[in-house]
Image 1: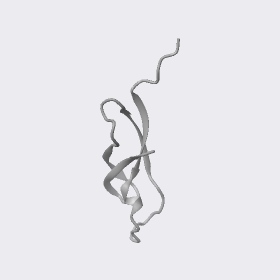
Image 2 (image 1 turned 30 degrees about the vertical axis):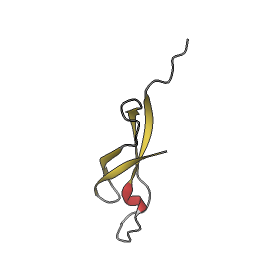
Image 3 (image 1 turned 60 degrees about the vertical axis):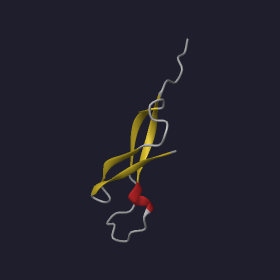
Length: 65
């Protein structure tokens, strides 16, 4: 018997600063984190404060598809 997927899913978080066209950035590229969330407790998209090595500071990371 196989079990259902459950409520926990793997999500990808992407830095919000990547969407800005700021020339002062030293590095170019996209930095992403992976995490898990409970679908039942948080049905909406997540925003977390994480460290972005491209900006060299803490930024908001948003959940992407």
